[in-house]
Length: 267
Image (tube, rainbow, N blue to C red; front, side):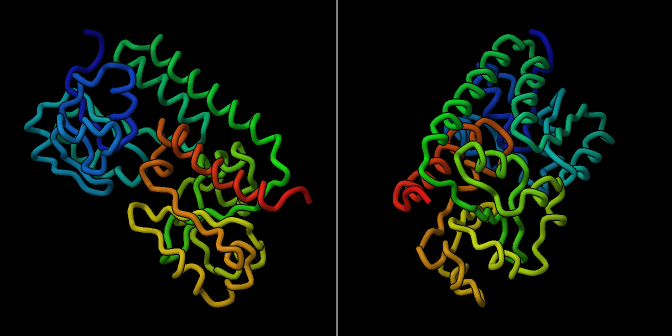
């Protein structure tokens, strides 16, 4: 067997990728937020959240490799490294970054060819959605909200998927900021001024409350609020930088955009 044999996944996306590649037997621990594939929750012990982890439980599993994501897991990684564990913290933030991540993770476990084929299949799916979007009568302006208090706008891969699905993110420059604190809306009136046609919410695992969004001062002037175009995208589908976002996540966004566009018709 090439590569690590006892892997702990601190986030959801490495688990989904390794199962998709048929390498799930290497996984000895997963994130408590894991829902894809559903069988992983039954088969694997849950040893981490996103910002915390059961370090003692992880060490008992005797991992030879731990996979995590982003600066938010830096403290968890540092603690494991101090215990002599090899840790890889990825930091990909774009659609291309997700595809590259799949290929790199596959290579680490000796499944490079399968990972390349899997990534190319995902790319073809995105290309098909993008081609389909060219037939839309109209492109909507879209506001994606990742958190509500304070409001945080969507990260880069989300903005890119909105574009692929046929819409235009109203804060493309903010989407390029990798850190969530850089995407905080200090002035929520910015959304009013941008006048989005659709509002998508995915509040990091918390239930999206469209009525709360609609009740914000002055937001009744926003076209999306007036038309009732406030939609939840479940966090596991869009906020993990892995296969889910590139399949079910973007498909749901495309469905919402197409329904709006066909109802509005050509400009």
